[in-house]
Image (cartoon, rainbow, N blue to C red; front, side, top):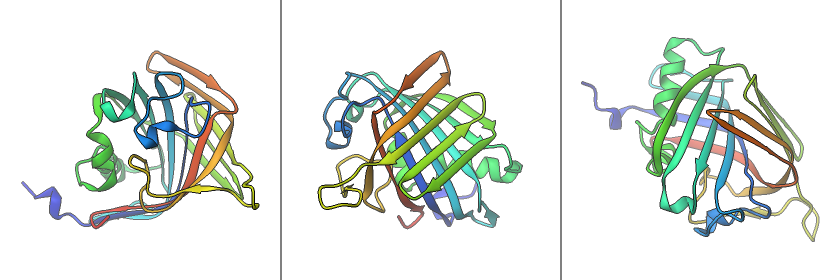
Length: 206
């Protein structure tokens, strides 16, 4: 069996997330969510990427996560959604990378997962435009966020918190315009809640 730790891989592109926290998410500072539980949706657009010889350019991935308390305590339940445009090799590669098999930031996050609810193929549309980010997972989820205005103008950022989805870049702070998720016996719907976005780089050397 091949040693997965030796497999060369890299993903880079754009990401955003939104959750039910009423203010900038305290979970990244290892504090409890503002409503006692976390209901998180994350989207990634891979501009350039590969696992070994399998190219992953242009594909989208989404993840829904439920945590019953402080996220640092684990017990996460997660469902993974993979771009239906991916062929079989690409689908397997994405499932393995985001499932944590090849290390890097995805593996760090998967250490907190108690229950994996499965991976599913879906049409995923991801849009990045200025301060706005929008993602639709057909039949499952829709999320849109917009960066907030800082006191000196521009969008404020957070860098190097103890817990985050993306460690490679500072996260721009945003608020949700719309957040709906209906799957896995969950039904979440929020507006004006926490959001983050940034470029991202994941890989065997990251």
